[in-house]
Amino acid sequence: MQGILRPIVALVSALAALTSPATAQNTRVEAVESQYNSIYVYQNPTYVTMTFGHNERLYTESMANRFDQTELPVTYTRFMTLPLAYRAETSDVLEIGMGGGSTIWYLHKTFPELTLDVVELDPAVVELARKYFFVKPGEKLNIDVRDGRIFLRKSDKKYDAILVDAYRGPFVPFHLLTREFFEIVEDSLKPGGVVAQNVEPSTMLYDAALATIASVFDHLDVYRASGNYVVIAYNGEAKSDAELAARAAEIDRTFSPRYRMSEMIEGRTVPEKIEGDVLTDDFAPVEALHATERHNRRPQD
Amino acid sequence: MRTVIYVCALVLGSVLMGFEILASRYLTPYFGSGVHTWAALIAVVLLAMTLGYFIGGLLIDRFPTLRLAALFSGLAGVWFLVVPVISTGFLEAIMLGFEDEVVGVLLASCVLLLGPIAALGTYSPIAVRLMMSDIARSGSTAGTIYGVSTFGNIVGTLGTALWVIPNVGTRAATFGFGAVALACAAVLWLAAGGFRPGGSRRWAG
Image (spheres, rainbow over the protein chains, first blue to last red):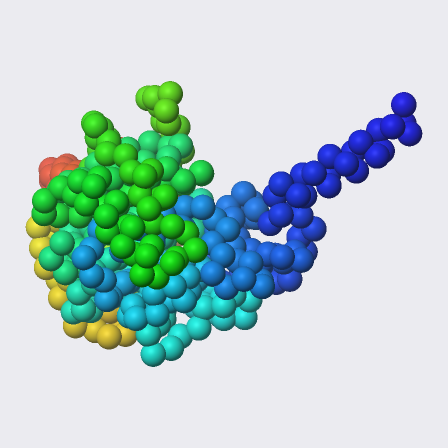
């Protein structure tokens, strides 16, 4: 019996490694205690991963293919590029929360004419990204190190799209989740500008996040990537599926992005009912909401 | 009378630390939640307590009456009623006016906390002086007041972080602290009428 078990275990491990290439044979190449986070960088033959928090891989945050600059191994980050399909023209994009910079680098390589600003709170994250990932500041890519909300308040620049991806591991900074924050985001958008936010769907914080965003913006679409959802919100007239599909197809034709907009745009869902408390600077019990699972999940969730 | 003094030590101790925890919710939207915000917060609270201890000690020797404690508690209470109304204004002005975030958060913490925390900080030396009956018991008098007050600190810290913030809005909680501080002020003022410092045994000199 023993003799059979060993090769079976080996086979199962090998298969597991094949199905999750990012976690196969990971070695930790760096661990940094920054002012804000415990950051761990792992490498395996193909991928480099930046994770946060004590539970390490439980909170995988950023991943990149070491030999392929435009691969976005983390699914939801592909959907974070969809705001481009909501605009007739996009020239200025802001990302709040850089992590490894995979999303912003993909945008830079795929749409070189975009002017990209990235704001990251933790200078250690920026340093590790410089060391292990591809993202590099340049003429069209500007990296700022500060709190995203403070950056927006102090900047006069208006953007076509603002991508919010600022949570690190288990810690959710409440001041980036409130109605006041989204009002500040709205102020920093050009007319008809779009905000994209990744949200984790498993806790009551999801309902609160949607309610909060909906209290500021006229329309809200949800895209379900595996693990995380991406919420895209905008003001003005509601965009029809046809309108978005047409624009997505145009972008695909012009730029041939690796992750086709037309395919991703099909995942658009418009929530029928938004329940949940609107979070404000005055009252935002994010820790309690984050710790509570959603009970009202419908089958398709 | 002793009961009143001990109970107020506990209650005002809770309010002091409770407002410190609440202060983080005021400061974070304007200055972030990083370590500099917490460091500024803690440093300013300690500075305020330093001022409170010195001022409280000086004044109570001059004016040995429980009314002094009532006055300071009342001042803190009034500040708590005012802060939720004016905070957005001065926090935003400071945030926009200072490029250096550390300087900004230190200044904002001072404006937010120095007054009420110093006022609340006067309570312990006041209480020690008024409870002091003889030198043989001076150590335990001081120790008991500070012990009770520090226990109040624990209640305020944990209660605010774990119950108040998740259940009550920041503004409402601040008003609540104001009401509590004003109630203590009223009780202390009334108790002052029938209270003789040192109790029945006066300390000669």
